[in-house]
Structure formats: structure tokens, C-alpha cells
Image (cartoon, rainbow, N blue to C red; front, top):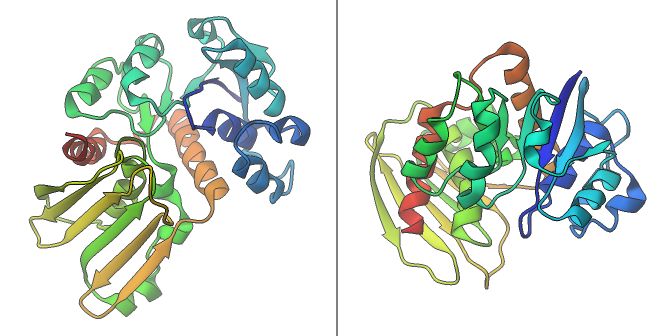
Length: 297
């Protein structure tokens, strides 16, 4: 049994609830008032306890607000609430840093990284390369740090062999997300970089202006493939989507299954703990953050 601690909470981010529930199960009554209606909705669509990840328990929780800690613990069946994060060290086998305020990741993760605890850092891990390197400088061994957008594991965003045959060689991808560039661009950058396996090195980036906390970056790879990543900001709505253009056709992909994506990403982190493998390579994360940094500048 792997014991995990969870740290939250940041504005608009319900991951402490959802991630913990995927590991522990949940209380429907308490989860219904978590403040994120989509979470109890997709949790209720699963079969419990079969939907839980096996051999793992979120055993400890801390947030900066004791009332929030109590709410998370009740909703996701967490046994222990700690007064300071460092109390978890020595009691957990890994940490879920389930906050998406990237500017605070280094400060919160530092004691755990120094203590050798595996840490899953919520997206985006950092907003610039200097901040990314400062976090990795504290890594005690390869693979201690795990980070991702769960959308990288979303099945509905994968190009099946049938779709690949239909569109031919990929030439360009248009990826769009609602909400802010700083918090949500990572959700479209990671799936595209995964989609373009075997791509050449990043060659150039061009910023397209965008208001309302949004942003848009056009990326050209040395092999000629290109992509445009657009966050629409706070005043426009759209599905999180990808249009993939090939030399023989095109296809639209839409994100729709948060539960499965979260579960797969958590399982990847746990597999890294069990096997001592690197599941979140620095070079991939550096490429992601470099695009985020350009759009946030």
C-alpha cells in the first residue's frame, strides 16, 4: 500500500478532491458540496469501489485553510489532517501537490524534495525555465519529480491508427482551450507534443497578442510541422479541442473524460514510485515550459 499526502487548495482548482477520491473513494454527501459540481457528477458515473486505484491511499491532507482541509478530508475519506505540510514527511510515500498556482510550487515542494519524497506537481510545474530549473535543482534522484497535464493521457485525444491513416502525415495542429494562458495552456501543449512523436526540435515561436488573460503562440518545428496554441482567456467560451491537419485530411478531437485522464496520470506517478523509473522527463517538461513562458511574456 502506497500512502500519499495531498496539498491544496488554489483558486478554481478542485484536484485535491478529485485526485484523492480516485485513490480513496468518496462520500457522495460531502463531495456534493465541494464547490466543483463537475467532480461529483463524473464520480457518480463510476462504479465504486471498483473505480478506485488499487494499493494506494491518500492518508494525509494539508491546506492553508483548516476549514478547506476538513472539507477535503470528509469528501475524500482522508484520515489525517496536518497543521503544517512538513508533518507528512516520514508518514507518506509520495506527495500530491495539487495546486495550480505555479508561483508557489517551489516553496511548497522544497521540503519534500530535499527529504527525497516523490512529488507529483500539478500543472503547470512552472511558468518559466528559471523556475523549472530551481525546482529540479532540489531533485535528489532521477524520477523524483512528476508533473503533467492529465490530458496527455486522455484516450479521446489520441490519434488511433485509423485516424492516422485518414489524415496522413501531420502538418499542423490548432489547439484551443478556454480560460487563462498561464493555467490552461499546458492542457493543450502537452497532448500536442505527445501527438507529434518523432518531431524535430523546436525551431521558433511567435506570439500572437491576446487579451483577457489569454494568449496564443505559434510554434514551428525544424521538420516543418507547426502548431498554434490558443487560450481564449476569461471572456470567451469554447470546448478544449484540437484540429489536426494532415497531408490527406483533418480530424477534430475534443476532451471529454476527466476521470479517466486523472486516473491514468495518477497511476503513472504511482508506477514511477513502484519501479523507480523516470515518468516525467526533464527535457519534455522544459519544452512545455518554454512555450508557456513565451505566451506569458
